[in-house]
Length: 153
Length: 269
Image (cartoon, rainbow over all chains, first blue to last red):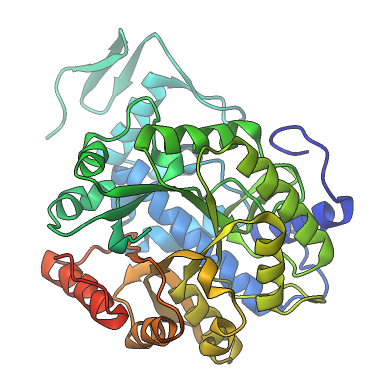
């Protein structure tokens, strides 16, 4: 399946590329003939790059993990192909919701009030919503989020 | 076209880039541009007469599947919006079977991959208002069963498509270092007169491998390779890529000056 729905130029090449991507991002088996250690090193480099991108989209989330952010994210993301840094960070935050506090919990709450996201398809902007957040109640109206009760600063 | 020394435009360093007195050449990640509303700083550079080159990273020209028409249209719209003299993309694939790899991956050096690349580049060129330059990537591994040497594969691709070459000197260095080869040997196998411009960047050594991260200073070996390249055929421009761990302004200025000195081009700082 291509993004554009087009038929592959070459079915054998398509299958070989998919097998490599699965090995690097989705826990698939290493295809024959590759230097497995080198491919794993490349895959790990990609995970670290993804961690940096997610940290830009979710700064409070990354900050909550301090210097262990890249390692924590990489371990979680290793068998999960990227769906873009916004969703990657959201999925990570939801999977670690229990441990989130302060600014990181607030960052997740603000995303959840602004967007409808079922974890499976792309997030959609909400038009209006009301939600408890650490330190008060967040109200989304006309595309703007306001916090009633003030932030916990 | 004479581009000179440039630096990749990123929002984090927009102030530094915009303040470079001699800058006539920059590059912006195409996927980050809204063609209807490009960043005002970029339009300001364009008005000053600087060339702004949209650089795509997610087209997947090397994919076994046809390039996505919407992504090609976006690249074309970026070129129009920025008055770009050319656009660039990679000799790589970034997704397969509907799964995003998250980065640029190498293609096998086979006839089948060459055919797919050729078809995708031609399809892209047909929609672009300006020439396309394609960039060989840095890779930590190669596919087994290569049917072409790297230089022959790239030369054949350029011959078939008429595309220009975006030669990343740091990628040439990184690949040669990780393969235990001499980077100059690849320079001697490439059609250097087809180079539209060059990339330059720094990387980090990790676990015995050199990763081209764009987050560190340009190594002296890469600067030396620039000099080797210019001794053979000097390309129209060299562009510094920095994608994080931004150093103090003085260090970034010194990097640009070092690239100018190594290439014999005018300093822009």
